[in-house]
Length: 169
Image 1: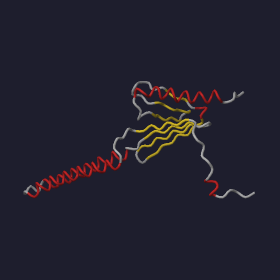
Image 2: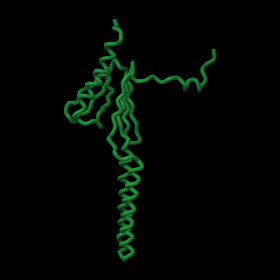
Image 3: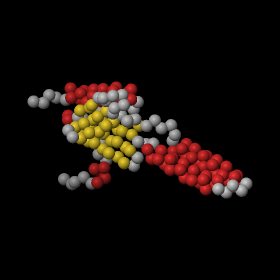
């Protein structure tokens, strides 16, 4: 029998999660709107500075440029973290938690039978997903009042699979 070629190995279906939560920031500005707002702010600032420079107040122009650079930095920081998210997936045999922060991504993949889901200790607390010494905190982008309900849903999903699996003995 021949080993499978690389093309057929890539075509294997990936297992679908039983449950999935994608917890994201509520960003009302898309990339195009953000660029349009930034462009209009820079245009207004430079037009005003140009008008003052035309009337002999040249010192205004360097300050307008510094202002535009500061705006650019602020918009870049905003844009970098606009897609921050927490992703939690429950599979039959494991749980996957991925934290997206800026350009970094941290993944926790643990066996499902060892997972414990901790209740937020306060309204400001995050949900703890732990397996032994491995831990991940999720819920940063969920309203504090909804975190307890989210933790409850995750625990129900976790215990539902435990009830459905055959007894071990």
